[in-house]
Image (cartoon, rainbow, N blue to C red; front, side, top):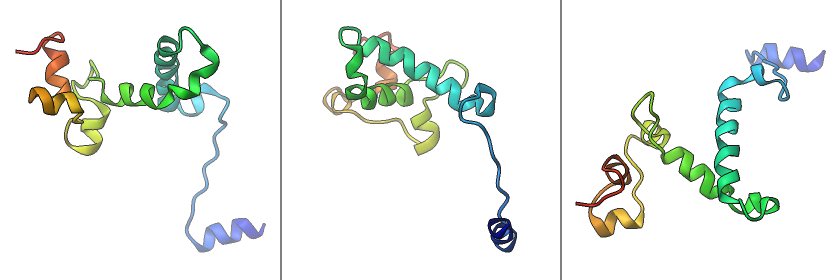
Length: 105
């Protein structure tokens, strides 16, 4: 009862969803499904070491161009494409590299 009073006092609306129900947060569940696919490819030889490749998998997903929007999640969030060391060496962006089929001009 005290917590409800505190929420009312602070104008907080508490929303509860179940973390184990896919329909509770569809966007998160969709991202996790794609994350599992990428992780499986990265840890093909040693699945028990998935946590060592998690950063790489998240980076790959966040910098991949979405076929629906034509932008990466990174670009939509930061307003620019991510720059990796190869971009500086070859004076290109990662997106330009992949749009060209992985060939540098």
